[in-house]
Image (cartoon, rainbow over all chains, first blue to last red; front, side, top):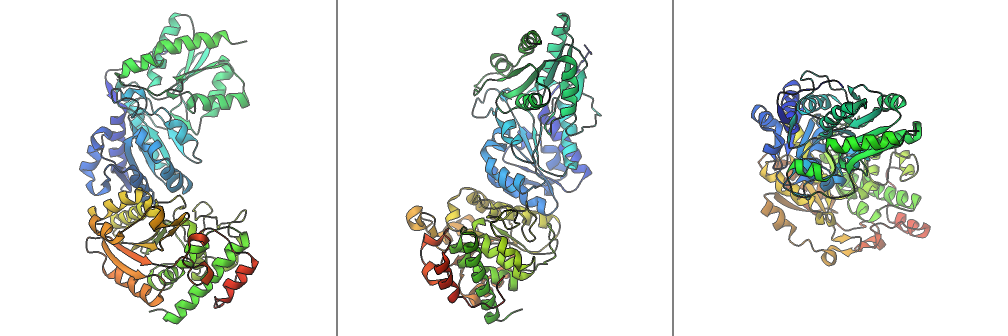
Length: 318
Length: 281
């Protein structure tokens, strides 16, 4: 197992804020909109340097999506910012008609996704957003795994023409990816090469997968770990190549098992290479109040759950 | 004036013929408010709008128009065709398979003149505001026009947008309300009354004007006047009274022709009231 270390912990939303600031410096057409959550979305640096390119819309997410769609007509590249719940479920039809169907170059940037939002509870902890967004024709869906990857992804989507959903989170987590990485939309990252099982993880679950990989190594199981940061378009080639070698797969996501990364992988495998698969994901449930660590543990999204899923799926190999 | 009022009325008559023929041709669509807005569309595209028919999405240096109540697509399609955006023969494909003239307007099929999809109601004002903000950032002082249905104002997003535009001094925006007082289930006064739209928009900080949307002289003058009010810190709201079904006697004054197509006999009766002035498609 390749050794991953970290010297600091940071939140992925700060990676978004830093990436937005960089994208703003690089391209004057980058504009930002926020629905009364500037601090939570870490947009301060962008606003300070480009006040005229920032629009505060107030607590009016539907209007924000519509305004963003309209701004693209004048050549702008709008980044909308609010919590994941209010970025997707609340404004699904606005995104569907004014952004996706109209093929507008809007970047829907969503913080506080999943259980790790914590104490605010289930009203704010969306676990369905990946499914909602990936079902929209033409929508790119990205869920990066740490500060550096989120920053790189934010800069990369500014250069991509078309609608994008970028999902990130609130808690501080290890920073373990390369600060100078080049982010390629739709291209998987090989975290660790192995032979016994393929662990496919996205977002906050990538570090958990690394922790699980270390535990599995102690148990004599050689896990291949792949980071799928882009859930749509899915890197079919990387997944198929790995699964051909290992013969079984565990998918890991901070999302409902219905509609998430795991289902995308299952759809690919069932048509191309039927393979035993286990899902580490929430099981058709809402969340609740608690600390992020407590919630990840209670809802089965810890390294130990990945280890158990791996042992189970290896047992199912023919 | 680029045209006389008589010339504009003749254009509107042809557009009305097209509307009933298009809706009849596919036995679906929304003739009522399309007819009601024929004078507005004629005035806008043939007299008021500073626009080019060699279409670009951005429309730099041009006035832009956004239709929020997308179901009145027949009037827009006919207007765009006669204005020169595409050949009028294409009107025959309305709502048919593989057509660029979808039931509700869309950019998906790349029909010239359309900049956003609409149909699911309540979204157009926000989009128009966004386009206006982008023009401002680009130093482009052109105008943004939008048309909204009155029943559509029951959608909450309109009021988010109505609050935003004055606060942010989006003052090159002229939004018109097709105030015909009808919606699918009946008169708006019975479904969910709009009441005092002027007072509501003024309270939000809009400069409100009133026009008669079925009087060509009045609508041309009203839209020109609206342009003179722009750039003064407030968005402009044109509260435009219209008759649903205007121009076809049996369709007027009722919600029943909101989304119903005429049969052969009804078509003939409608066309008899609408002189062919520019040639049918």
